[in-house]
Amino acid sequence: MRDISKSIVAKIKEGHVVPETRFKLQWKSYLFWTMMCVMIFIGALSLSLVIFNFSDMNPGFLQYMGLQKFFMILFITAPYLWMALSLSALLFGIMAFRKTTRGYRRSTLFVTSLIVLIISILGVFGHILKIDNRMRGLLSRGAPNFSDVTNPMEGRWQRPGDGLIAGEITNTEPGSFDLKSFNDQNWKIIYDQKTEIVDGTQITIGKKVGIIGEKTEEFLMYAFSIKKFPDDWNGQPPSGPMPPPGLDGQFPPGGFMPLPPPDIRMPN
Amino acid sequence: MKNIQTDATDNELVERSKENPDVFGELVSRYQNRLFYYVKRISYFSSEDIEDILQETFMKAYRSLNIFDGDLKFSTWIYQIARNTTIDAIRKKQVRPQTVCFDTEDTVKLLKSDINIQIHTEAKDHLKIIQDIINAMPYKYKEVMVLRFLEEKNYEEIMDIIQKPKGTVAALINRGRKMLLDEARNKFNINELN
Image 1 (cartoon, each protein chain N blue to C red):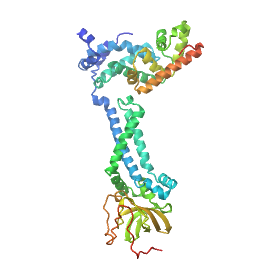
Image 2 (spheres, helix red, strand yellow):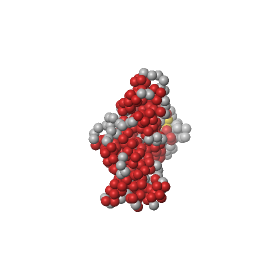
Image 3 (cartoon, rainbow over the protein chains, first blue to last red):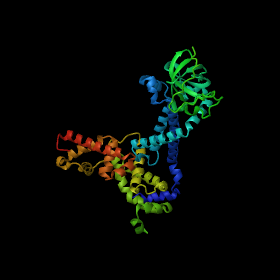
Image 4 (cartoon, each protein chain N blue to C red):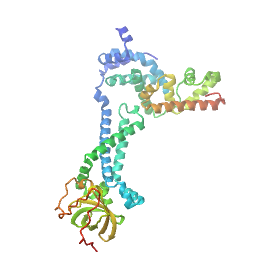
């Protein structure tokens, strides 16, 4: 072939061609790096909301629910929106990394593992720092009509037929308390020495709790287990008056209520 | 001045080219022939078309000198630009390369790493059949085999030129080689190839 070096040099000189700036040449790569970071952030936030929405369930409930019911409830009330968003962020994060200047050098397995690891670490930190809880609060206020989708945890605890009910304690009595559920139903909850109190949950007015038990009558439930919700749902301290003297609602570390007074009357 | 440029490394020439386009001419001289044969091997274009592709390749390279940071070898970088420019040209013509231009020497090179093909293909018509097999291979295999066995690039360089992970490059080369040997076995009805 003929020597083209002279014609190229001539072209450069005639056209006053100059090497372009690094930013102009690489802006796309910078854009994809930024996109990847944004995707990781979204993925981590979504993952922390996934963790938040599962944080109310623990394997200890298996003894009350049985394996089948436990997984059925988890399956029905899983936070699919946040799971889908988390996976989408992972997928788009991988794609964005691939489009960066040297993104082709790493295998898909490596890139996927790396992004999963970063999202997981940030997601867990987000949960520990309660960013997910604040996000949930924002979503509840901003889009209250979509709470079934954004926060399926609430729905999970409105299944009295399956032995799950939750809400705010409105009144306490020895051996029982009144509960206003999240869909504004008033329930009477009965508990006794056999009732397990998870993590020393306080039975105080204004406290939001979840009950695993058995629905014995309409709006009456016997509690097998009582647990508090993550940070009282919105990070606020419990409100309302203190329980009567001697029954401060604080269960001993063993998890069982002291013997109830002899005049306790069970509701009919 | 001429000698200084001839003795300088590619990276030194790149640095000087940013200030003085004449120096870039030396880089063009160094790579134009290699790139000509490379483009010829991966495309079906005429010499005139290839010359146009090379002009565009070197102009792109000159405009992009500021992102050449020594992370890649200059030869790898310029091959990468030439490859992308060639693929763009193929797309513009909206035709995948059907017949690439291998000569007899090329064909033997493609096979020599594994087998002594000359034993089995002494006659020229046999080499013609081999060329046909190579031409019939999917482009992605043909491309990496050209880079590995004709351009004699290592896996890292091929990875950077075709911008695919190293594992993908290795898999493409192995599959391409196997495909070539299997087809050769069928065509020549021989079992000695391995």
